[in-house]
Image 1 (tube, one colour):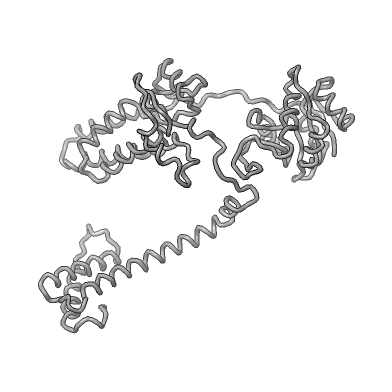
Image 2: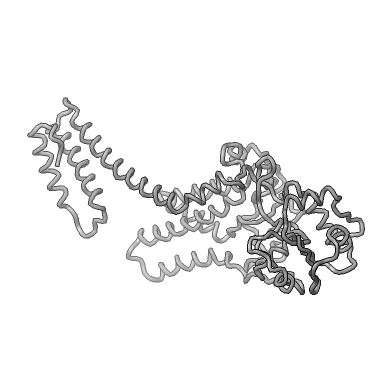
Length: 424
């Protein structure tokens, strides 16, 4: 019912209009009850104000519209509060660890300017796609000699799909969905070009012409990898294609099945160049002989830290694969991860006080003739920092690593295959 502050005549007339409008609900009406009531009240206000039944001298139209707005706000606030409560219940602990936990960090470990799309990447198929050439595969895969220094290639859509999307955007530009997704696609692809100067067909375009050059310094954007915008742009391209197909179907609902089939066939052919090849299989470094035997003999606690040499890093993470394959050890020193530096900035291959020891131990493990092991102070500092329950080395007797470890820790407590172990 309406507020009692309205004049009786106005309230009676307005209620009559509301009752009449509220009954106008057909089978095709998909609105909720709240939305129908809101629309009825709004329409009643317009009609009564238009015929002068609802005067403005007492601010009654404003009062009614405010009543409608507050009712909507109450419903939205209740929904947002419920969603926030459920989110905190499910994700609260994880969010706290992410932003306030012991490994919180800031910044990006990567040089973000490297991660940008090349203009030609939109039409250059990589070698992992079904339709490609040897030349396109060589140009698309990131290499050290690539003119843009790319590490990954995410932008490819292909000439057929781009042509279909362009034609669809022009033909159905009046459709709001088509227009919104087309603009979104173009903006995201421009963002994916990054902030550096571009060279296209012999012409060099300065960075100031790229939109990301002006946005990259803003809070929360400085750590974004620009080429990842191309992934979101793929979604915009898919939405644009879907909206266009729907617009083509509804524009002429009585077209023949041949026309409908033709439109569908064009869409399928446009996305066919995106079909990938099966993922290539490569051989992983097998678990070294004696690995399971050594850990079965050690009988360590599940959370006992173990120093395995070679120490796993981003450059040689094979020890992490052995751990994943066997479940041993339960806790591993080192690893391929993003973590905070001493200043709190996100870095890779940062091992705190043991940083120098990690790289010298791995150099000994690799076996180059000029490699030198950690100094006594370096290895003592590293062991005091790690506090390993055991030291496990994948090496052979007589190697430089074996000589270093036996000089430091004495004879190994156990040996199996290519694996040696010392208890701490």
